[in-house]
Image 1: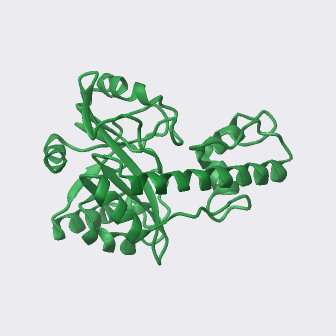
Image 2: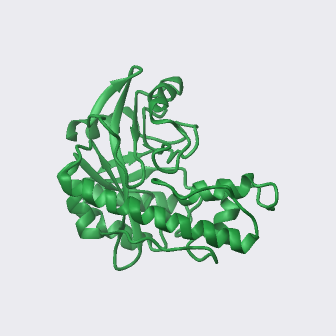
Length: 265
């Protein structure tokens, strides 16, 4: 049974949850704790950990960083924003908006349609993919198809982001968060290289719905590889739904795993 879902996105990045709706939805899903982890954004006036709707609400963030091998995602929990982190997030939001505008232009030119969506602060590729699916003159009926054929990393409409460097990202999150971990390690082109960086961190996301793996297949062997990394470096095991919609508790941590995380926060 899932005790805490520690990976949820809201409308402040590329999710569909209103931030205020997350805790009540978590309570309805039978969760005891939930974490908001928007991409490259923190939540206004949200303490590192608080209680809402009878659920413990953890202030988190998901930050994409650049390594020599590829871009990976870090999860920070128990956020108290520093000036340095705030400045970098503001830079990333400006870059996101510029990138979003260019992707929209590329998709509209490629499909010869007007998507009726504007680049804005917090925009992400899922917003654009949903606009493609919702448009009556496109043939796409699933967001995954839009990523696979148009806006994925190798797609004809893709535009790269200017993301934070790995060392800088770790430093910024360590100064602002109680726990810093690696997100969805089996989603990368080189899971081994991503997991090799776990020794720099506090946690690794072990429980995750690997529905769109892009690296190693999500087999039991892959899962055990992540577990072995956690044991080798005495890391915390985190996990969550990576919710971009409104379904929670698909994955997450047990009570014992959450208690270990909570002690660190």
